[in-house]
Image (cartoon, rainbow, N blue to C red):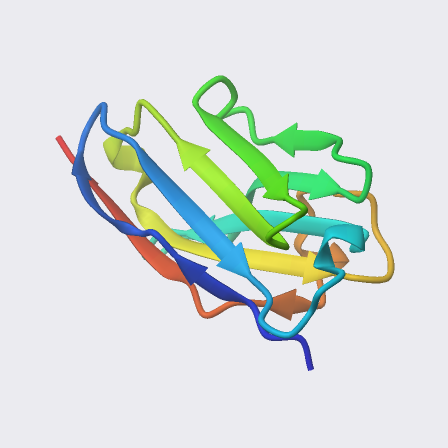
Length: 126
């Protein structure tokens, strides 16, 4: 069972920045995984894809975050990041890291991902 651990959430004012981190303790080669992504779920709403990255480093973003969020991997540290800038109140949600080590192409589709973290809360105030 793959364990994903997120960190970096918090409360910020609109216009601020946060960086989320996702680690897979014990998995040295997570940088070779097929797909990794960030999803979010606000109260009363469905979980949605925010950003994803495939094994080769190609990225995808939801339209709502393009130009503001950046997904990246640090292969040396086997860590996934989500840099979030120019945050808006509508970005408030629980953010989840997701992964599929064996298949997928880094899409924003929930069904592509088999492993999920517990989530980290991001709250943006106006």
